[in-house]
Length: 111
Image (cartoon, rainbow, N blue to C red; front, side):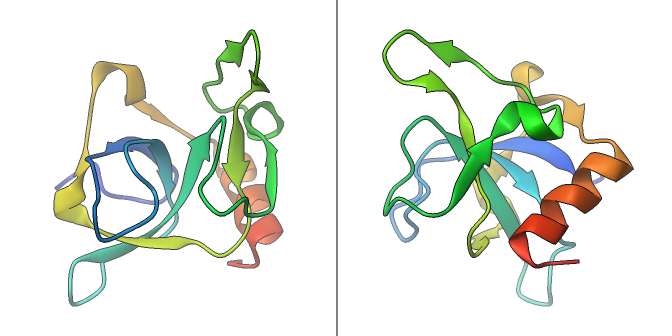
């Protein structure tokens, strides 16, 4: 899993046990001893309405939806996801700059 490092944007698989669903996420940590990584999800409509900021603030890929506007990133409590539930796609082959990742982690309280 060479692509599992802080600041990489990946796609989650459909997660029944979590409330993320199938969304792009930013990895915030390395896998722990159980294979879990902390992630911040990106969406137009986050489950449970956590604190959010526009993705463009962190120079992340964003889509402007005609009815929903710009996508947002969850800056509340990070979700824990097993690395098996993450997959790389051509649309997600991106990494955040160190400064943008540090700003995101600071806003989440993970720095």
